[in-house]
Image (cartoon, rainbow, N blue to C red; front, side, top):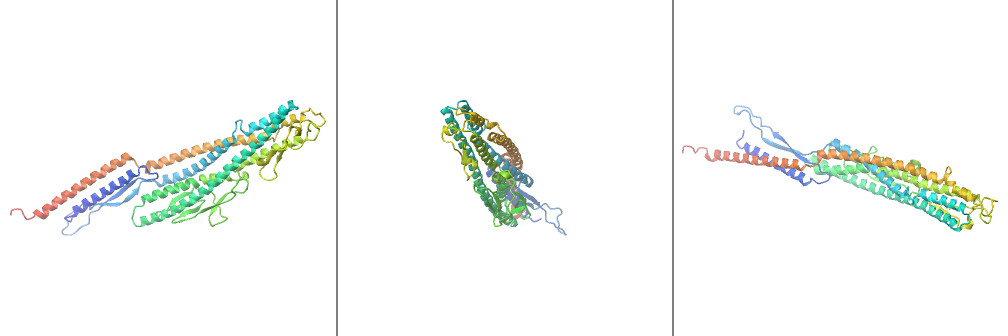
Length: 469
């Protein structure tokens, strides 16, 4: 064994201990950094140099310690589980928020809700049937009809406004996904180059994993780690990011709920090749924007408002035309609906004064109120607007409760997956303190070995041959 080999061994120990303290310092510095994964120094013992021959001195100790690298203490399986969990959580959370917002806009069951306005409208006709010569009762009927038409229109506008907001969210979400995909591809390049040259890419990998997790929450995309260190991100079986290349999304479709059609996300530059996004926040947004015939929640509510307006106008007009006014004239339409645009927005009261109300049955006399009484009972008939609205509200309440429950369960699963991931990758202050003391003690011991070797060499070099002089 060479005379100076002890210096090399002690120097390698000093370098390893110092690198260990540097890594512990990095962990402690990033203890509160979101997405940071703790690191450890990987070392291995340097074997003794093989020697044989006449002057061999037998078994030799090793040559010290080698720093093999700095490893991330993460778990690829737990990372994949988190990406799957956040995709489902993003989908149901977005649906639950939209459903609760729409439910709040309905204001059911309150006195400002449509059901209460319908009830007031029919009650007004009943009061008028009891006192057909009361101008006040007639004014109440006309006023409640105007209030009812306005409430139907306001409800439709609230849904249309929410639809427009979700449509804008789709554009923003797609822009976020496109930007993140470009960043992931850039990080893939840096990581691949760093690993190829033997440098540490741990912080770059942390940033990339955070971006992939964000894309998974938005779209439900899945990530696959490749042999060269890059990550492939796939959606609908196609690669959004592959190696150092990324693709982009484009959004096409109507920009208002009245325009009809379906909002579609497709691959940019590949018209006619839509992306089937059925998970993540984007998947929920596209499902919310779907037409009523495809199960779109917001379009279904808007369609129900139109159905209520149409049923209200048809049933009341039919019965009103069957009666006569106090002057004996035949009753006309009580409501009108614009021929263009949604029925809910085009519903208006056609009767301007009490003299236009057809309260009496034909030939029954000017003070008869048989037709008014018949109109007051229309709310109980099959196919009445009350029944249409009640079916919507009850069915929507059940659906909303289901979405909220699924969102709660998905969020619980997401939190559980993230907790399991962080239990492995998160920095523990107490553990890092112990590691710091361990590396510090190793550094001090290696320094003492270096001093001891130096003193031995001093005796060998400066005192050999001086004995006996």
